[in-house]
Image (cartoon, rainbow, N blue to C red; front, side, top):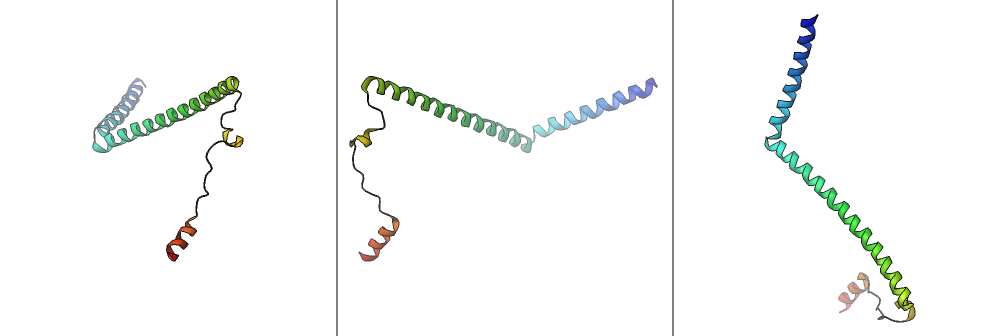
Length: 106
């Protein structure tokens, strides 16, 4: 019974070592290196996306703070300038259909 136990332990160790050796050998092949680089790039892209979202959230929060400060100090609500009649008047944009008609006429 003892021999059978130790034979099982030896077989399990051999299988584990064999798998580890295969994984290590695959990691140094071009395909393994490309996989590692791909994983690293995906992780970097995720981190950059998270960073961008944090920056946008911080910008929005700071914009609200600044708007409140401007309103408290001057009594003017930022962004309401166009409602008071200030600001430049914009010409309506011409549609591409109008431009095509002008080219055909002209």
